[in-house]
Amino acid sequence: MIERTNDWNELMQAAGGGDEAAYRRLLSELAGFLRAVLRRRAAGLGLAAAELEDVLQETLLAIHLKRGTWAPDQPVAPWVAAIARNKMVDALRRRGRRVTAPIEDFADTLAAPEPAEELSSREAARLLAVLSGRQRQVVEALTVEGEDVKAVAGRLNISEGAVRVALHRGLAALSAAYRSIRE
Image (tube, rainbow, N blue to C red):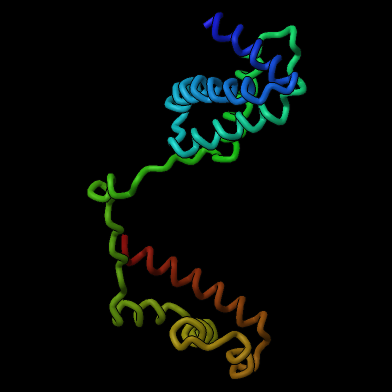
């Protein structure tokens, strides 16, 4: 590994001097090295192969763009490793904390939703009988007949606010009555 990093230092210096062949060789060697390093790190983090390749490409691009920041008296490998680590962190941040798994793998184990219990018309009528006069009129008009608040207010000659209050109180009374017959 030490020989390789010394070669990388020499290649980076030559590339800095304008040697395009040295620069291509450096990037090629770094790509192979980084792919192996990133693959090991990505395995524990759950990154897919496509995400890994994206991180590799972003790392190589950052090396290209930031090559002027490399200090020739410093080894290339730690500088490259720091860039790769930062690009891996960026990828994980973009990804968030989501975990993806194909639904087909779990189709047999997912529970089907419980069917909703429906009231019979006799039970519904018995519940509505709990309500008195105006509350019953408002609840039936809004929930059973599907009228809107404004129409009910006009028909019953009360304000829209009074309709909403009557609906709220009526539904609360129905809820309490429903709980008592289910217990």
